[in-house]
Image 1: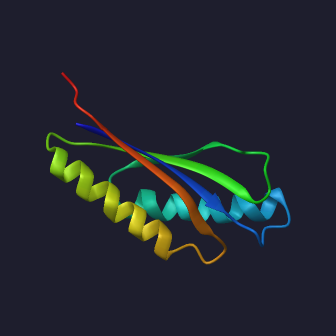
Image 2: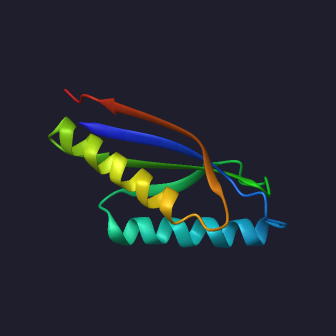
Length: 96
């Protein structure tokens, strides 16, 4: 099973790309260090107050994939001092 999650993060207090990138880099590094997922900023790289981040996880159990995605989403939501989650989209794909 492959779990894919896209997150749109709004950062209304960000006043520069440098500030936004600092927040996104810190968040992605913490997620990478704590969970066994791949994560990156995938869109809106030139927008000051919006970041689109995606992460993926792989497992032989769809329950494990779903639990991992929900745990990572809660972690991200709880660690966004400089913003909030505006949109979350998840998908679990069965690999044959």
